[in-house]
Amino acid sequence: MVGSNKGVYCSNFSSPILGDNDYGHNHITENNYGIHAYANSNPLLGDFDEFGWYSSGFNTIMNNTSYNLYAKQYCTVLAENNWWGSAPPNTALFYSGAGSTIDYNPWLTTPPTYNFQGEGKELEEQSQLADKHLEIDAPRIPIIVRLLNIRNLINSSRFREAFNLSKQVVSLFPDSALTNYALDLLWQAGKEYNIDSLKNNLTTIYNASDRTLCGAAGLILSGYLGENRLAFLDEIKSRFSNSYIAELALYDKFLYYFFNVENLESAGQILAQLETEFPESQSTLDAQMIYYNQGSNGNSSYSNLNKNNNTPEIELPKEYALLGNYPNPFNPNTNISYALPFESEVEIKIFDIMGREIKTFNLNGASAGYHSILWDGLNNNGNQVSSGIYIYVFKARSLETTDFFTKSAKMIMLK
Image 1 (tube, helix red, strand yellow):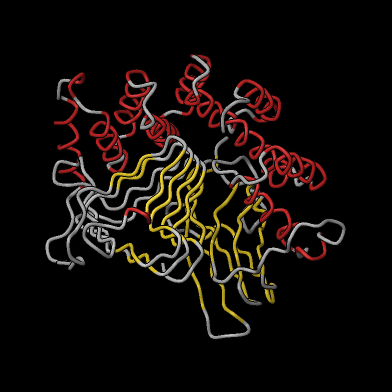
Image 2: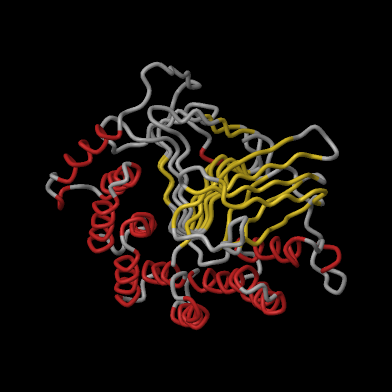
């Protein structure tokens, strides 16, 4: 994670774990932003201690130009026990705004050293620890401990317990900025535990009040509404017009038109609305990047789409990247997006959870830029695949240099 605009970027309910077991091991240096979190995203920089409660850290995050850590729009970043290049850290390189919190204290006083002997805990041991936590007198548990406990339950595949505890946190702490993290965990646990229960609880939260937390629940719920999604997003935007939820609702409409129904004309209209109502927002910048670089599934360049407007040209990617798939969960179509800094040979393979190859895409001579490819849920034989978890592996080999890139990610088909 060196030499990029953003070493780690997570947006719109994205909560990566940067580390495993006792140490993080990550080096995030010499970028513009080290870690950039936006819109209800809650990166965890490390894992848990022996009780499954606290971030372990031991990441190196330093020498990033603008900020080592930047969080905006109701993000919770847990970043204890990391090395920030100095002790104490330079606080000018931290930014938290619009309901976001950053916890970087305590910090390491010297660069971390790693001991790889004896790392890891068995899943059964983690599960037993989680059971002990559930027995603690609930009213006395601080919210941060509850959240970390829920995260540990999800990591241990104890989705029912995690789902119920997430509901409890949302109910007990509706006004805490940290509760947006609980909403993210509710979604993560619920989509694995019971989709109907998840939708019912999101509906209950959405109807409870006009808190931004309720609007955020509505945004998650909208992804499960099928043909009623656009009307519901309009309702969310109107109801929460005085908060950032309105911005995200409009951005979700843009994504729906662009990826779900591939209606570039309607997507362009929503982009123009974003540029008018939220001209400097991250959502508008992301929408511009998608629209002007990925038109017609990535086959049109920004310069071709930009002849009749005055929007400044967006640069080509500086490095390879797998940008994820949208929507996720999906039924039956999803778009897999990626970035190519050079003309490249591209291969995307999709596997089921048992490791069996389902679908392969081979693209020879793909141009540099931002691209996406549609998977319609059919296997190599033209048959519709069943609901479940699928792994896709992206490989790119430059035709101009010796660069080679590979990365995998998970997606879920729901019916």
